Image (cartoon, rainbow, N blue to C red; front, side, top):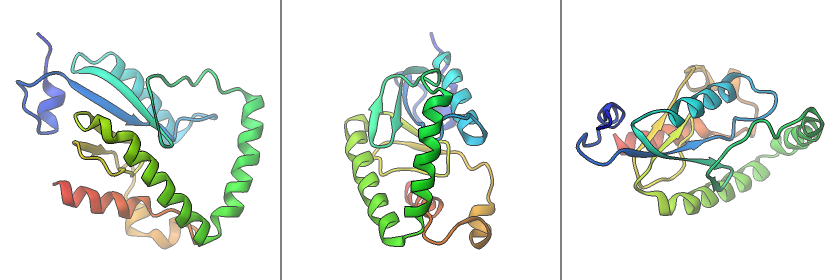
Length: 170
């Protein structure tokens, strides 16, 4: 019989079925650093946990059953740098950022709807709208305590949205 410590730690009935987890993996990209590294290692650990029956991934607004870091090569990273420059340019325009956030939130909510029974883990200060149990990892509170030092004008306000969702679910 499997150990149900993961279920107990997040307040689920330990006598229930082994948990299913959906992990937010937007931060897992080349080069693998910081929160991306944390999410990647979390993925590897959850795959071998006896508490986790199924592991799925939310990337953008799409649920995936597998995430492969090996598919990211330096050649693709060049396109990533170009995309990053375009994102920085567009990210300075508040209406563009707000429209993107609304569309992404809608896509994620729609993607997660069939997975109400799974635990969603957002490893990067972010929780999408999800009717099931949620967990978020806060690695550093400076972006909440000192947002004027850490956030560019027009940048996403994920931490504030996450805090609102956490306070509702607690």
